[in-house]
Image 1 (cartoon, rainbow over the protein chains, first blue to last red):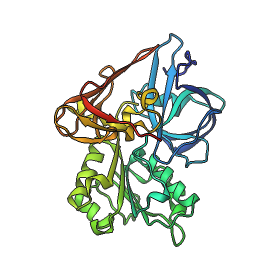
Image 2 (cartoon, each protein chain N blue to C red):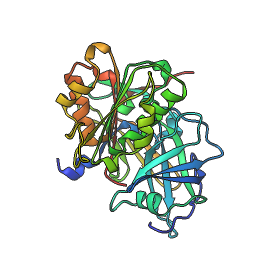
Image 3 (cartoon, each protein chain N blue to C red):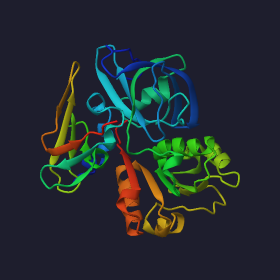
Image 4 (tube, chains in turn brown, cyan):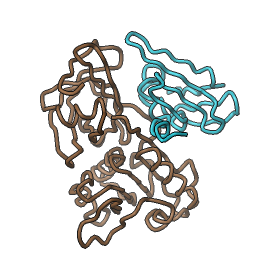
Length: 250
Length: 91
């Protein structure tokens, strides 16, 4: 589908959205800010579906988490996946002013708002940080003092999505606590974690079970399942560990 | 299970779009009961395979097929035959 996408016949639930801004987050990841006139508003943690139609009518659709907090236009952060059908277009081809089809917002379970309380432990693998970022942005926008900690696993420092904004969110007395682990390569002098997230790392970073924390975990399937079972092993009740897996098809 | 299959194993959050018209935007929070083993929980907890073609949702406890959805150009085909009940919130 690279290079061209036309608008298909609109069917129920789908609407046309215009890309109004494209932001480079890392060399492989971009955020696309959308203008969607019929957008009803969304909650932190929800996703939307994107559908592309080729000139010959072939359609491909994928789900993307919404990165922007409630009250702002929907923005999706997309990672370029080799051999993908949709992500190479969204990351490599799409320009401001282009139009795509979307439907959403979607999801009523993997969502958080300050009234649901905390403390919060957010655990993201790579672009799994996206729905967690919507939660962190909402927490900051509402000046919530719910204690919140983000553990983010990235391949390298260059691959950390929202790196500068995360540093800014960590500022201040009620700031988000941000803990990075870099699994593939680390900058010179790196003193942080440099290994995959597992039960022992969670034991060091996550709130103890007695804190009755609420966990949100998002990433590739294997990552999510390792983290979720690690948190349960630490004593988190399964119903306090909300998970969202994403696939390797982009 | 091959690595390829594992990559395509997702969860019930991935059912939300296909069931949007049936259950509304927050449909993944809908609580269902497995017709086979009686496990009860939100649809978000199902084990979901995408691109089968279509989407298949299985019980996370007993692996029974509970939900199948196929989106065609002019309609969405849904079978919930594996579910004993679906609890639709009245708001």
